Length: 121
Image 1 (cartoon, rainbow, N blue to C red):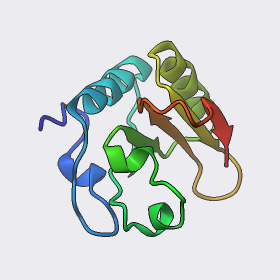
Image 2: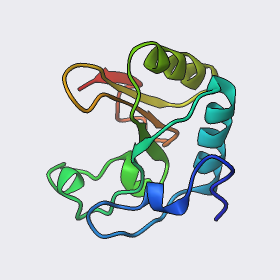
Image 3: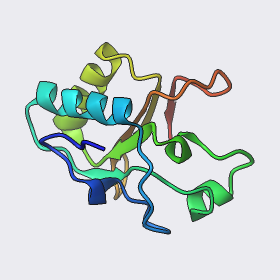
């Protein structure tokens, strides 16, 4: 797996079990996003195993378990730029958490017609 010039494998590891099972096409797209926005991006969540507490409480595991989702810790104008570029790049799932502590943007390219395209937390 090639994590590109902006990211490392450890940034995408499951915080529950430590496993990393990211999709190369997704990693390439996140690197292209980073190149386009022109500022550093911090991964707050990458791969999640199905037993990860956030996934285990769902009726069906989500995009993070496929290795095709990344949460980026951004806020303010940087969040706006990530959203704009993410939409231009064709990310299929966009989640927005921009209130309180732990602000982030979720971007995925998971083919699942049973979820919204854009949502807020």
